[in-house]
Length: 273
Image (cartoon, rainbow, N blue to C red; front, side):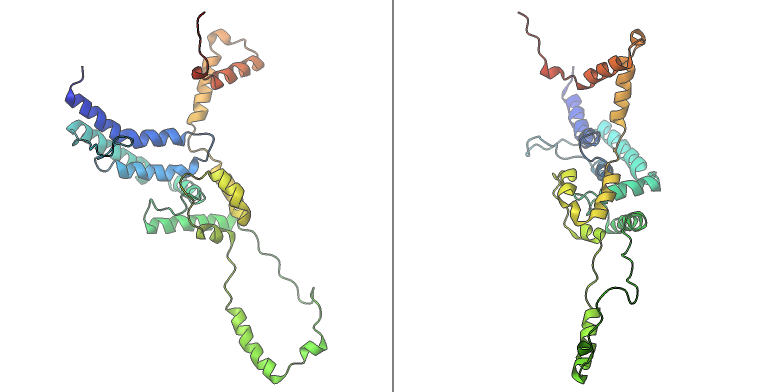
């Protein structure tokens, strides 16, 4: 039997844990990019758990949550401390580097606005350093003296004093032409994509404009954010080949695994005659 105070604890607990529940569910996806969601989710959880929630998503806008009960306050503070310790304070530098690069290569999050400007610059430097070492195309070899190009005609070489004077000014203007931007600069200069953008489709459409960045993104963003899906698959395999099914052939085991992973109860209904 739940009284009013018990229901308050339930509502407040749901409000505290809702962002984590939504984030964890999405980050386990297998049909879209997930590696770039890790840092934004981590810092979102740290930020939202720092203070008591006032609203609950999908509830009426005019519904305000009651003040936290002592039990929920204690649980939220412990949840916040654990998120901050695990995702910020004790996150290994190499792990952070990989996640930061993945995040910046996602056109939705390349603004890196969930962190401070200083942290954004540090993350951008990690990206630039990695790209320059492993992904930046080598410059085209310089043409040797005497190779290629027509010889200047004698008529072209005879210049009046005025033309020689003007040539100096023209050369100075040419030297002030802006430097051609590389692929990474072109990518970063563009505005971030809308949050509902399909990252794979975005690179399929825009990747030809910065091919070296696209190759880098293909490798980094193909990394799954979590192994939960794989672990569930191995667990299903273990349950499928139990003590009474040790003699299953490889083909039959594969068929049973396929059926177990693709069976959707909602699609099948039984109606007695």
